[in-house]
Length: 208
Picture 1 (cartoon, helix red, strand yellow):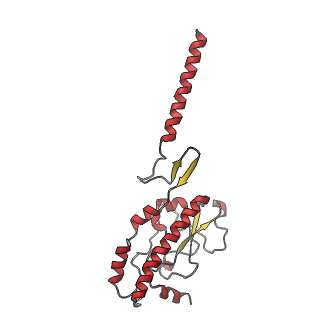
Picture 2 (cartoon, one colour):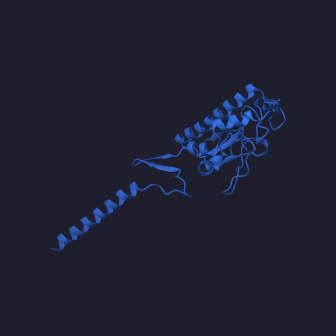
Picture 3 (spheres, helix red, strand yellow):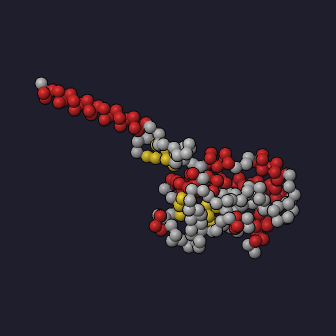
């Protein structure tokens, strides 16, 4: 009789443990400060990072808003006249730069990239030069919490985020000078306004 009771008790405990494990797998990873979690459960054995695409789109102006703004100004921040063709180039460049940066992060997520640094591989940006130093790095977690730190920052911006394939201990071992954290507390520093327009030809002139 005692053996039967022990067996029943053991089986009951095992059933309760199994039910608890099943419920735990269905629970979502808790979100921080009311936002979706960075890590999403996908099946039992794999996890996926959440793309910043939607969060960034919610912070940036629409193509219609950009066109309306450009149609209402005649000069960039340096007083340089903006021609009709340059307006179209600025809109295309903004869209292309945003897509390139988002794809870079999404591709980095597939490889487990944890650090990204700011770079100006083609043209130095005279606007961003006052805010960002080439080589300043951010973590993937900082990007998740602050999607506004993803370039482009303004119309005519040539800044990009480049994946750094290294660990925390090796993040400063790079050929890029100024490999320092972009910010050290929870709040990113000021960034350019998207309305700080500079023509691409003007930025090209900075690099001559």
